[in-house]
Length: 227
Length: 285
Image (cartoon, rainbow over all chains, first blue to last red; front, side, top):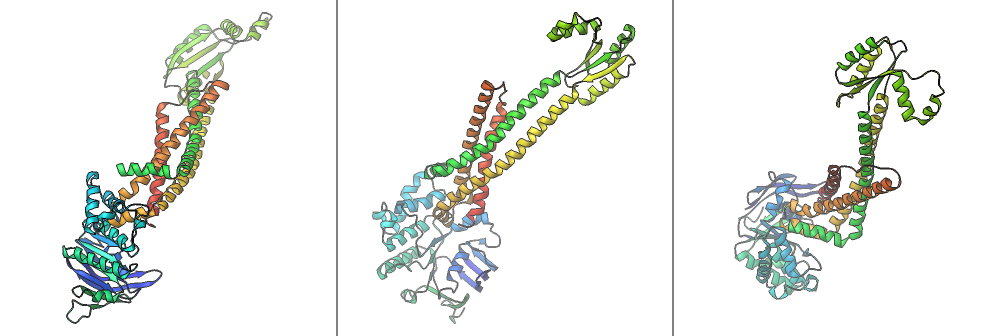
């Protein structure tokens, strides 16, 4: 479903971010993408989301290629790939339900369906009781749940998460990870970038990839473990 | 579309001063164009009126003999574009001068000799009052030996044409310059609007909203600003016309099609400026 074929990314200012990455993520897989800061985790996610294009090589997402998808068509990729950030990126001053409803509205959901669907999505992440609360009144864990509900609005095939627990305490982290597992159990692939190895170890069933200075140095699904 | 309309309308509520100033600037820019259009239109009307009076007058020598004059009348009448050739005798010329100029009437009774020459007045068919045909007829008239002098008002028409052309070019240059200013101002207003809504735009793109969906509220906002500017310009131009008409001299109002055209230009200005600003700016959000 997701393929990175010999992908390299070089930035004009900071130089090489990724080098010759080969990666394939099938449907329904749970992947931890680990590595130190600056190892290329976020760049990999941005390439899958087609927020950026590779300098060389090709990224394929559910049939869409980075080489053949024009800028004006990228929205089609985005509806297949949900994205969750460390800092939630919610619309301040709006309620949890409004934040989810906004994603539904701007992706063309019929007006009559928006509120019920937003409510269902919030129920799915365990937040139906706080649907009417302004997001700034919610805890970090709750805000991340709203962000996950929003990412699920277009029923994507894969959920990308960039350090989603980076701003959360242990208890909230556990709750969010459980939620990702529940989502994955229903068949949605999850690619989570994290530098927290404790977190990775607590979920032994997941595939683990490690990046170091832009190179893939470990893949738990390779027999040797090397990339 | 409902979303775009709602968002565009909310932009006016969020930043009324900014959108109001943008509309005002577009309005002032289009008012300049409107005023020059008013002048250009009236000049054109004036030229058309004068053009209708274009005629060639051939003044005859004292020794012109009636049979020769009759032949000349027939010859000139058959020239292309000529509608009518009329002979005015010396006596008729004096009579007309008395009617038109009271000063002449006072002194003409003391005159021993009638100083006015006989003449042939040649009028043209509509559509044949061009420089070429008038000159051709004037030359043909001048070729008769008993014709002393040929006069026609073509040089005035040409001057008026020139004036009208200068007016139109000035309107275009000034309109263009003010248009650029208005475009820049609308562009800046839209950039500020895009910046103010950068979080929403980020989320829209994140979750897969189409680019056209992201852009449409801004385009609509620009078009609405342009429309308001166009209406303001129409009102200011009309007000100026009324003031000139009542206090200075009668001036014709521009045709309705020009008005609609002006409003359409306002809308186009706004939408284009927004389109440029959004296209450039969305890449940065």
